[in-house]
Length: 562
Image 1 (tube, helix red, strand yellow):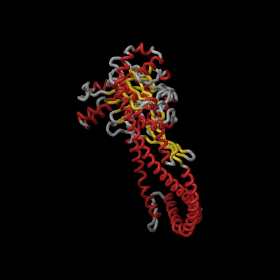
Image 2 (image 1 turned 120 degrees about the horizontal axis):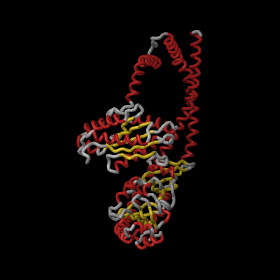
Image 3 (image 1 turned 180 degrees about the vertical axis):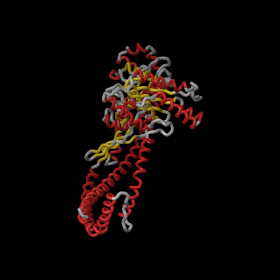
Image 4 (image 1 turned 90 degrees about the horizontal axis):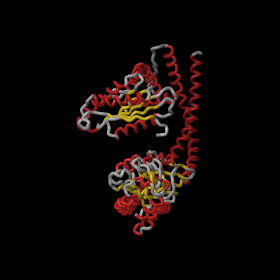
């Protein structure tokens, strides 16, 4: 093909691109105008929702304060009543567990209570006046709640919750707990909130609030408000505090419990959720969310109007763009691109040449930038290789970093799931390390981290083994192709080697630096995810910490755990 034919072909292509550009500009104009209109309306309704949520939150805070006043009397009653109930039941655990629910119900009535439950040292309900709750695992609600119950065991103190809900029925309850010193079990009792409030004339001001008066007042004041409710959410519960027996879906509850935003769009309504600061619920691990449902019918009408205005605006932009492209773009851009293409063709034919255009405009600048790019390609290629290696190393300890750990763990989990071998994962945490930093200083703390990393590297010397810094004073060892016994021996060796290094630690009761570890064995063919592996090995590490530190716990991976 000769040069003239090449120029004609280039001119035709650019003209085709010019035409397509007009089509694209038209589409983008329409989409942009629609997008702007949409987001403007969205912002308008979001602002209204924010204002409404502010009013809702203020109202709910006042409601919570009023409820606290009512609860204060019940808390005082439970503080004095729980030890009396414990005296009535006695300390013979076996005898109490043999009492039928009907007898426990009568004892509850005698003490002006609604229900009584007996919780053993494993935090399982073994006897109750409400029979469906027998066998309930009290550790499944929240971690904070579990710790709270463990701290009360054998302490001889009364613990009283804020108003919460029955797991089985959704009824509002005021729960209290008492464990006599040396008893080895917890007595749990509750007051039925609706019945108690309805029977208390001093609390009549709040009766209507519990029976949806808050919802009725707000829907009467705000025409766009269709529904208002408040939910108490844990890992297993998602009951309403305003509408007894009403629940959220488990999917929405899980997302809210994790702190993720949730909104439900329906044809003419929008449901939003916002966390509200009810007193003392967070400390027990519960999340309190207000649910507001807004009328969106006006929004739909405005969007239809915006669609027509956007269409008319697009037609006007297309006409102007066509005229400008025909009279200006052809002369200003197409001819300059012809020259640029000839220069680029010459570069491809003659190595070492550069683009050389007359004048100074955007196309000339493109040519200059392309010359600079050609000069930098080889240097940048070398730098990319170097950076790729450095990006996998923790700068302080010189072992693998979190990014490298994530990559390796994904590969190893996939290998195990395909029945290509087993693996052990060990998570370690330096004991009393905050005190070490406070006593010796952060420079010494950095040196201690490096020493521990070196010990881990010496203990795991196979090419396939990985030592990584997980974060702070935590490390993880991924050891492929090992059986359970080998993983356990390695965990034991690491714990012993760190302590045998005799790194002084005056903040530790052991006088030397030590580590706690959790070792998780994943058998070949086990289907799992990196997140499940990390969660379970972290739980094993927690057991070691809780059991007194400077030790390790070993377990097999369980697909039933999360």
